[in-house]
Image (spheres, rainbow over the protein chains, first blue to last red):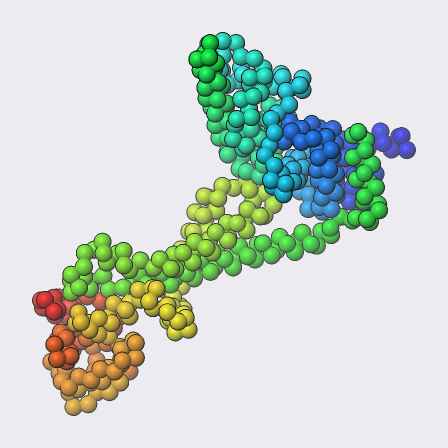
Length: 201
Length: 249
């Protein structure tokens, strides 16, 4: 049994997804590979509570299982499952008419993300003081949802442009445009916040 | 906590005996989407064919008589209703394409250009084959109020007060003719001997255009008779020579 589990860990996701059609164990292995990553993604993207996150994930995995025959093996399995989870979360938010909550900034990865983003958007030279990581994270909350979504996928989930395109179901060229616009918007938000802070002082 | 999700998913699959949806379902859905795209693009093409017929069928030279500006003529004669129908079908085709696997990887503008071009080619072929005319006439016959929404070529010639009448010859005897216009009104003309132009033949069943002047008494004085297919915007000598002062002015 243990030997089988070890073997299944060596199998790529796409092959495991094909096996999962007939083998519940293979599907359990896939769930095991992604549940933690996806819970973290849900928390970062939608700031859902632990309970909601688990409900979303459970429904998303059930949908994944039911739609295994629709899976296109030329697409990374991770992109497909991220997409299903994202759509499930959006459905839940629409049904409950809940607005997205602020990003959690107690996450260590999120903190390093703030550092990367701050340097990437080259904002330091434009503001009069050193920006706190929390300020960067707070600024993220003010971004348009689609801009926030691409930044999280790119910098926190470390997805390639092609993967982001598959997850958000948009053309790859649009991903590049959105990332560029998101950075621009981020810079503007940070600079406005900086200006307000200076006026207070 | 995370172990719970895997366990809950496995339990639910087992308890509710959930199975992956068969591949045939997704294949059937894909075929249905493709069929929708093909049908909607073809319908867009058909609508384009009708639009080409309407645009070509309109006599753009009529403004010489009506005195309308080119702008007014263009604005009143664009086939808006058909354009909206074409947009609707094209939107359905684009929506269907986006529902295909990886359909999202192509920008909607690319689909619009691609399907628009295909539809236009189909439309020109339909118009050239004469099917656009047949389709438009069938719709005009069976759709009540169609003529009041779309400015048909027949409407252009249903303006007796402006000196324009058209229709089908129903009888031709002793120099006089009886014409039934496109709204079904019967016109009797006592003498139209000297004004048949551009190859118009005085034969029962022929479709002709009458240019003349409506008298205060209600009598219509015919000045020229043209075959239905000849346009005032044409450059033939027979048309140029027929122009008198704008009717009624």
